[in-house]
Image (cartoon, one colour):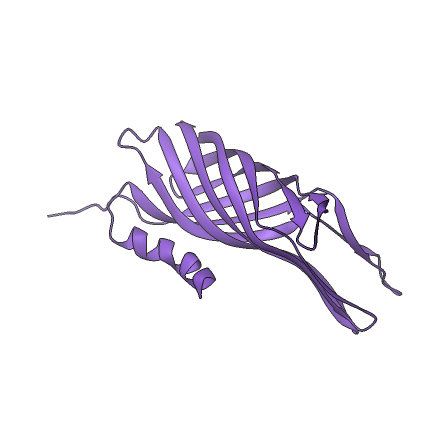
Length: 195
């Protein structure tokens, strides 16, 4: 229930504010970190899942200061990577909560912030290899630069620096550092009125 509220809350918060606060959707494809598992395929290439790998789908809000030279971005997302075969599948997933600050110059924004990953989990349902590895929640840092040709669209690079600890044995850690391509879409804006 808490996870559903966290995913929906940013929508409600942005609906009641003015031009400085806008709903935002962020999509990033990230890769890197320590190898978690490799899936052997008989008739295809092997597939490896690293701790930094995944597609991150996030939504939240973008808050501009009145001068519009600094932007705060708050998002909640779902990051995952998976592979499947006829006898099962394996999934690496988590819920990232992220707070970023960006300095803005014409057509560019650059900055960083913090990310907190809830419920990192590696789960396999393969017939001969069933397991669920749960990791502790993890706090990490992000640096990000984006090209913003318009006020509602930006594309750029994101670096994430984070480490995961296995719940059942905290001495086992996985480096989740990653580099990703990130796309940000903002909604809303100044309305024009004609009389």
